[in-house]
Image 1 (tube, rainbow, N blue to C red):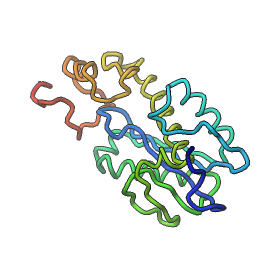
Image 2: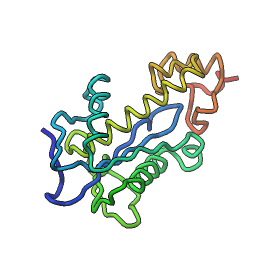
Image 3: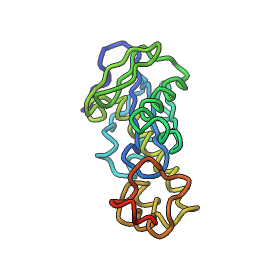
Image 4: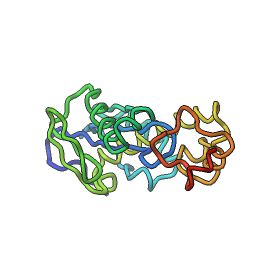
Length: 198
């Protein structure tokens, strides 16, 4: 059973991202403030859940949470600021879009660029420890997966509907055959040997 909060009675927003290790597509972050009166018992780290369960929980989180927000940072911005900073930026932007301002942020991971006005705690494997971070991980992943499935309709040769932009064999074969799309992160090493692109 995941903990509901780090400090009882404090308004905390869980924050997490999805898509850091992908070759294509945005990095997507979510921030979630859960409602103590409407708890979601089945919450868990999104990686431990089936797609069907994640999709069902997404609807429950979006209807029961006190506040939630999801933000995507584009491949172009990732290339400008690097993936780590883009992940922090996405989480900060998600926090700033929350309709209720939290008193504290629970960040999944061991690093974060501090928010201007809200203190934070970094929690390693936080999505398997705290409900609000688990909720954020579910929203970030489901929203990003949906986006990549939509992009796959326009760019079918990369198999994004299946790999969601991660560096699978099918994805890399698509890059070899078709080159890079506008949605690829040009700062990432797209193939084991870059010369194969030419």
